[in-house]
Every structure is written in C-alpha cells, then in structure tokens.
Amino acid sequence: MSSSVLYDAPGPKARVRNWIFSVVGALAVLGLIVFAVVRLNDKGQFAPEMWDIFNYAGVRTSIRDGVLTTLKVFAVAAVLSLVLGVLLAVGRLSDHKPVRWFATVFIELFRAVPLLITIYVLWVLFLTYRSDLGLSGDDTGFWALVIGLTVYNGSVQAEVLRAGINAVPKGQREAAYALGMRKTQVMMTVLVPQAVRAMLPTIISQLVVTLKDTSLGYVITYQELLFQLQQLAGNTVVNDDNPYVPVIIVGGAIYIAMCLALSALATWIERRGRRAKTGIRVAGAGQPLAAADALDVIDQSAPAAPQDAAAGKTN
Image 1 (spheres, rainbow, N blue to C red):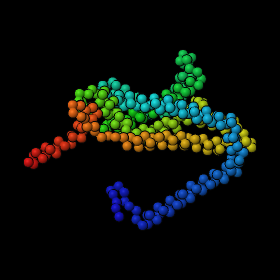
Image 2 (cartoon, rainbow, N blue to C red):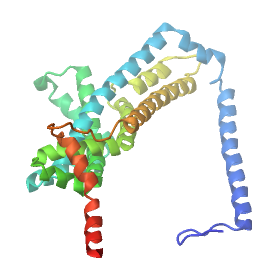
Image 3 (cartoon, rainbow, N blue to C red):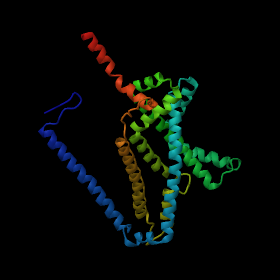
Image 4 (tube, one colour):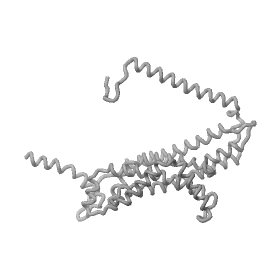
C-alpha cells in the first residue's frame, strides 16, 4: 500500500465507509431529482401541449434569432479579447515601467470587478451619451455587452498568455537576441506563437466562458438567446401556465451544444498542432537557414556544450 506525505491511502474500513457514503449521497441526489420531476409533472410542465409550442414557426424564429445574436456577440468579443489579451500580456512584460504599471492595473482591476457590474455600467453610460455617440437602441446593448466581455476576458487571456510566455525556455529568447533580433521581433515571432500553442487548451476554455457569459446581456434587455427564451416563456400560456421548464431544457441544450462544438474545435486545432512538422530543414550548399530554423539549431545544440566541456575536463 503506497502513501504520500499529504495523503494516506484508506484502509479496508475506510474504503467501505467511503463506498457507503458515495452510495447514500448518490441515492439522495437521485431522490431530489425524482421529487422535482414528479412535482413539475404534477403541475403539467411535462404535458405534451407544453412541448407543442416549438412546432410554431414564430417560436423557432425567435430562438434562431437569439442564437444568431449570441454567436455574433461571442464572435466579436472573442476576437477583441484575444487581441487585447496579447497587448496586455506584452505590456505587462514590457521594460517600460509606465506601460507595465498601466497593463498591471488594467488587468487586476477588470479581473476583480464582477463582469455583470462592468456590463451594466457601460450600458448606463452608453444610454446617457447615446446621442453623442450616434448609437441606436440595439447598438447600445450590443457594444455594452461586447466591451464588457472584452475587457474582462481580455484581462484573463493576458494572464494566460503571460504564463505561457514565461514558460518558454530562456534559451529561445537568448538565441533570438544572439541572431540580432529586436525585442519586438523576439516577442511576436518567437515567444508569443509558442505561448499560444502551449496555452491553447486554457485559451479555448476561456472562450467557452466568454460564450456562456453572453447570457448576461439578459440583464440589460439585449435580445440574445437567454432574453429571447425568457420572453418566450413569459409571454406564452399553455393550460393556464407558462412553459418555463420546456423552454429552460431546450435553451440549456442549445448552450451545451454550442459549448461542446467550441470545445471540439479546440481539440481538433490542438491535434493538428501536435501533428505539425517541427523538424529542422536542411539547407543546401550556399543556402542560409531561416531565422526560425537557426533558433531550433541553436536551441538543440545548446545542451551539448556542457557535455563537451565535461568530456574535455575528463580527458
């Protein structure tokens, strides 16, 4: 029986006790689910008439418009948050103190402030100065939601990218500087691409969070998917009751499908990145290696130097 300093492997009695607790807990959760389903069924929420509302063209059109609006907000906010994340990550690693301090304060501020408050404050500001900015009613909600998602998720993506840049082996940047590359070139052509590739699963996970956070547009009455679902359930009466449960189940299934599709895309991109060719191209006679190939040569040949030195001392 193996054990570690922080964890003692359970003995026979502890395993039996843990198994009993697991079974009892699972039965309790299952009992609560069954109780909730029975109560909702008694109220008629699972009646066939409740589900017939999705056969109407107007209902399907409303849900479709909500999905398209959600995807539009997500697409714009995802692109802007990634761009802002790169800028903030580079700024926080800058040698210039004002730039580094500004990026640090920006990141820490918008990571600490709840996203809902940020979106609501932006919405109020845009409503107040809507005429001066030339915004319509729909544009006000759209840009309040997009900018709120951008500044929050961009701050989180900046920390993810900064961790990825710091994880790149130090020899990579030293080799780049040895080739005469400027710091901007080193950052954008050597460090950032490797950081993005290393942190891609975390980046995609945060994009999934961005997709789910589009539902906060419901608070500012922006007509994304959650707002459309709420309006649909609140304005539809079937058997003297509102079909909240069917609408929630359908809406939840749509959100789950969109998040699973984004996760599947991330898995596909990651697998393609692993299958990418990373070998060093052999230059012909009189043909110089490219900068990236030279970096690989220097990086692979760097560990051999200490071994040669040790061998020389032994001889």
